[in-house]
Length: 69
Image 1 (cartoon, rainbow, N blue to C red):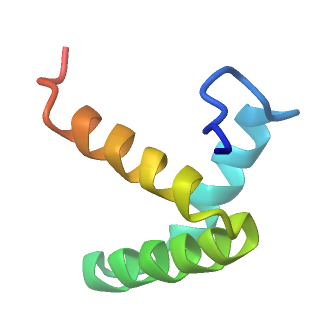
Image 2 (image 1 turned 180 degrees about the horizontal axis):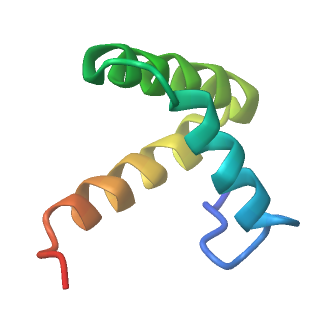
C-alpha cells in the first residue's frame, strides 16, 4: 500500500501558497469553494492512488476537527 507523504516535500512552498491565494483573488466565497473542489479533483486524479487519497482525506478531516490555536 502506498503511503501519504506528510513531511515537507515541495520546493518553494511559500511561492505556491502565494500563487494559490492569487488564484482565488477576486472570487466570491462560493466561487472560491468551487475552485477548491475543482483543484482537489484535478490533483486527486493526478495522484491516482485511492489508498493515498483516503489517507489524505482522513488527515484533512482530523485536522479540521482541531481547534485553531
